[in-house]
Image (cartoon, rainbow, N blue to C red; front, side):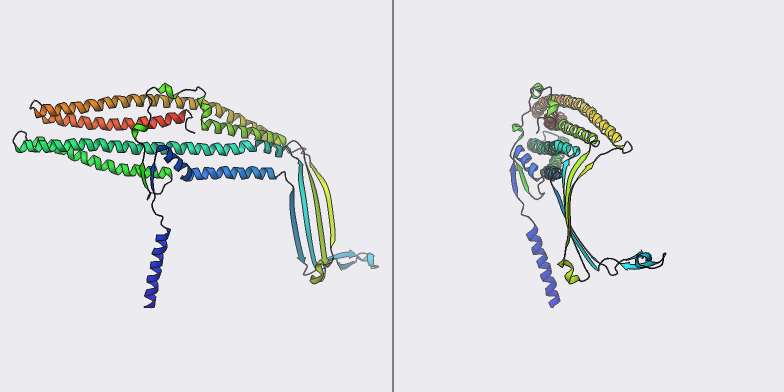
Length: 448
């Protein structure tokens, strides 16, 4: 009985601990900008990129520290279980030549305490390292900025995807509402003998398909919300609602308004990253060339030696020693290793210059492609909007003709299908326009 009670108490304690560790879901209502700000402070990639910047800062401090005095201490202790024996020539002790006398030098216990100091006085590599520390940190800061830009673009697209899905649901609701009314009217007319049963069936099939499409769209909408939460770095259990709507998203009709600077590529973070890489390779080339120059350092040491056959008296008497000095290291010949390293570093610099020039051309092409895609998407959106209005008008006229007996149910069904197709094409064009706008802003370096 006690064992059963113990098991029950352990299980209860486990559930209690689990309940305590589970976080209460939070509720958020974000605009696009608020969603981006949240992601920049909660998304794991942004957090890790920020940590890389801190790590780079510590690395710079590490490089600077190489020019500070380097102080180290050492302590040793030896217990000679058997004191080493040395053979001395017998002649030293009046013995015949060729004989040796075993003699033990030293004591059983020995200990040394030492303190050394070194100070770098001249090292070209260190000087160049100091010159390049700003560029080194700049590289990680720009990498962090690149991560932020990538997160901003992904969050914005995911946000727009949810807005478009909501708009699609609204269109489906409107179509379902009018189609439901049409089903009721047609069913009533069938009972009165004014229309055939097949007319009711045609409209019912369309209605059922539309309801199924709405249910599928709602499931996709829930998935889009989960994708947005993932891009935000938000828990899947949190509740998220969106404050902005599609009317708040500016879609400039004139694409020329979005293109204002011919040197836009200099604002692209990819170009800035490539520039930082080029600078670092140039510093590395200088460092390799500096390997031909001598280095000079100062050093000093203080040591105290203790020796005794009695462990208790080991530290009673010390034998100190100390020195100060300079060390000059002059490279003379290394089998042409340094020369070949310089040539390799020079090739790396040349390659990075070529990459930077190629990146400029690539970014220009990318921007032009984004501009054309945005222009095409705006044109398609405007065209699909007109088609949507026309399809809605065609359906309205078809219904009137059908009700007046001068049209057929097939004509109404076809008009309804055309409206659904126009709605779907409008939704797709709307999403394409929103996404291409984000791509255009990124291509011209407007997302920072």
